[in-house]
Picture 1: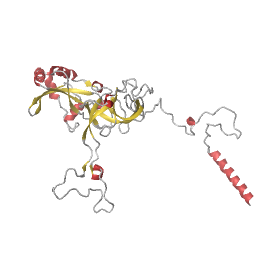
Picture 2: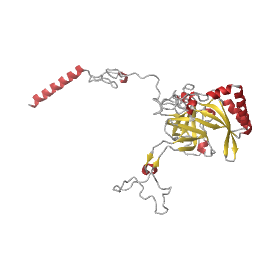
Picture 3: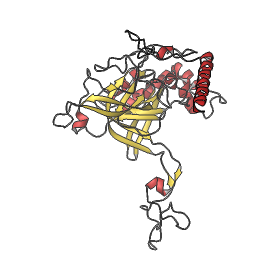
Picture 4: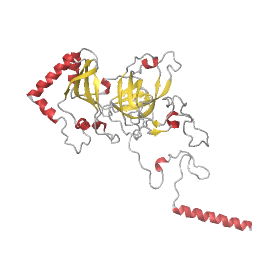
Length: 392
């Protein structure tokens, strides 16, 4: 699970033989997703039945965080906050250890599907704009090997963190499961894009004139109607992964490439609009991603095989995409002086003074004070008087 930070654009060299843009630079939009490590707190198993999968049992970690226990309460402050308290005390006893070993043995012998229970760590996100303190929980299936290998691997992950670079790699593709941006209850013109009726139409013009024939005596599903627009669950297949970066504390040169040697992080100056600073690991996907910023998004391994040349193209490690929309700031900017703008004045050019006694080229005239303004007013009044005398 990752959090959408925002979008930017990159410039990269295309390695696609036979294409018109091969060995050329292209500008492509990308989406930056912040991916704090997920914590594993449980192991569960399922067996196959004629009516579907049935859970055999679950083994929980002995230490779970408060953000995970918050998910079991509607109001954390007004609750007793005793979730997993009895389980923790029972797991430490002799009978609890026997029951835990019995469950693990049943998972090894009877289960056909092994999954781990993981949750997000919002405290590591350190983003007050993401106004959620309850962890997002999901089950992640373990594939590969037999049941014993799966169980041993799942037990080794208990009470540990899983980073995104241990699941995905650069240049491969993934599927994005997200909830689109919600727009509420909308009419047919905005929801379906139908044309408006003429100007003097009776009872409104942003409508569908005919919603169907007399018979069948019902409105067909294909007729555009008003209703909920957005906030739908959508899955986008085969999104190209352009880059996977570590946190800024580990790698302060996140956005540095062979073409752009500027030492900078993935966060632009001032932070991503509406999100802020990316402090944890991140993943960069090609194109847009469904949903608004700050929304949690699920990434999974691609279900369809990668067959097109675009998906099979490798992003060269030494020639990573050059990330744009970033500026470099070596230190804090100095404020302008109170009198003038000395930090913007160019140094005067060397050479003989101009015949009119003006300032050298490239230098700005100093700002006039109140005495200079009074003298200028007197000079203009004298000129007007002389002109009046000459005219008379």
